[in-house]
Image (cartoon, rainbow, N blue to C red):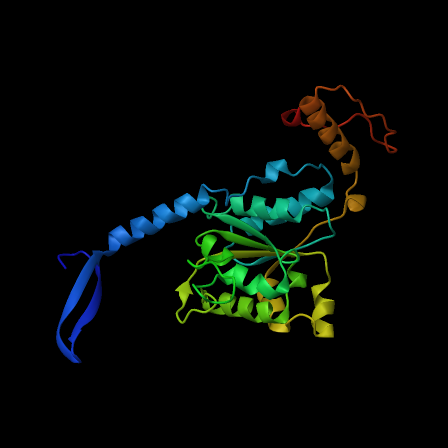
Length: 275
């Protein structure tokens, strides 16, 4: 209408079983888009953000430098990333850094620990639910993590702990790019980048039938293997110095670390930004 787009909602007027007319309400689509952006911005300011960047990943070893460079390259490719590594290797640190270096950095970052949520409610937490979906449900319904991450990134940690029902639902979301709240009868489009992480051998779980093969290949588009500290040459001292300096400043102490340098090394590399 005059180069403007409107959304029309038509409701028939029924009196005693007979349609005598209809009521049409029009709403400017541009206004709807602005309202959605406002709502998303409010969600973003509630803490759904990533605080770490690649500069926050401490280390000087060639092993960590190579992985950081690969992760930085992945940040510019809007595809699913699967981060592999033992506990404590910094999987969420890398996930947040990838998000903050991507084109989605101004949108929400939602982290979900799939191993910490009971399997009975995992699906409702991921995709949300409507009023009366189940006993004890919020009377107003609830938006799921995927809705909260719309336009941004969702980080699914410990994805190897996800049950078969949730795996199937996640596969459908990846394929169709839309979700359906539990108890609802309509789909909601979502635009999210998925980053997963696990310390398990998913290929072995696929072989044993505990993880869906089709989902495995959907999430293993850009694999990122994080090295353990024992495989990072020279980083143990760097990390020790970093944390000592950090806690010295916090607790007003002057603790000094003494250690023997490996053969061929001398001095301590420690960026001034961490003091």
